[in-house]
Structure formats: C-alpha cells, structure tokens
Length: 250
Image (cartoon, rainbow, N blue to C red; front, side, top):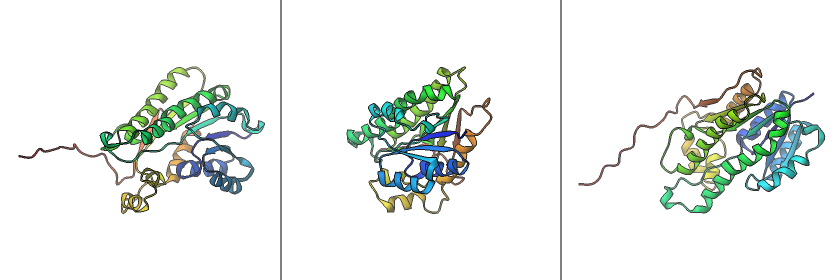
C-alpha cells in the first residue's frame, strides 16, 4: 500500500522538489497550488502518483470540500507538509502597506492552521506526521522582516503546541527552519526582480530546494517512535548577524 503525502505550495521550489523526491521513493503526492499550468506540468511529469489540486491557502472555506473530493486512493494521508508560504516586501513596518502583510498572515498562519485542522482526523487515523516549513527568521530577526519572521515564529510555536495536543495519537510534528535557499522566494518578495534575487545569492553557495527535500524525506522516514521537534539548517556561508547600532548625529 502506497503512502500519501499532502504538500501545499507544490508548484515551485521546495514543494516541487519534495514532490519529485517522494514520488521517486514510491509515495503518492497530493500537491496544491494556485497556478494551474504548473500543476498540470507536474502531473505530466510525475504521472499517476501525483494528484494536482487547485487550492488557495487564503480560502480556508475550500479546504473541507477539497479534502472530501479526493479520489479514494489519495484519502489516507500519512504526511502533511505545510510548505506554502511567502514574505512581504522588506519594508519597515511603519512604511508598509497593510494588504501585503495580510496576504502573508492569511497564507503563513491562518491557512496553515485551518488546513492542518481539516486534515488532522485522517492523520490521526493513520498515525501520520506533520512537517511545517518555518525559517531561521523565526529565531534571528532582521530589519524589514517583522511580519514574515513573526509568522514563522508562530509556525514553530504552533508545531510545539500541536505536539502537546496530539500526545498519545502517534502523530509526529516537526518544524524545519531553513536559512538561505535559492528558490523563487526572493522573486515573489520583490515582485519579480531577478537582479535582486541574483544579488542575494551571488557567490555564497546557498542551499537548494533539493537539499531541503532530502531533509524532509529523512524526517518523514525516521522510525515512528522518534520525533524531531525542530531542525535548523543554513548554508555554511551564512550566519546570524551581529547587533545593529544606530548612532545619532552630533
């Protein structure tokens, strides 16, 4: 019997790499995203082991019907990978517009909680696992990242609290917290500025989506009596910043 992983944000980056990894290892994948063309491309590439699902994380009222519409073979969910997420432009909060912040909170926090709650009965039934994609930003703050970092700190704390709620069910919960991974993340954050993305990752050997997919696979396939609460990883060339000091004039 094939196991099934439910992956949000499957149309690019870590989500797509993880879908490919799990299918290559014989798992079935339910992959969600908002871009139909990319879902169709993945479905063509991965074949019968991939079920594409149009789903917007900002529309939690759609989650229950989407779950109930799954074909029978995909209904036994063994792993939920809460991967979908994004960051607003790097503006100081006092200079930021509210709408981009709401999109981040609705996607990274509200949608993640609602989808997890929707799928929990099936995960409990299968004694499955939940892996949440947080970020090193949950621990190390930086200017212009207040809302994104706050959302990822929520994701980590949500996972720890969920572990308490699920004690005795056999369901494992893990927070994976990457540093710099070269994906479309910065393109989305900057509104498609390729030069900004290239500059950020230039000459520093960032992690790849495949690196994170391999980490997710390792966590997912550990013995069922072992839970990784959280794992933080960075490129060797990345570290946390020193203190920032503002010096007044005069």
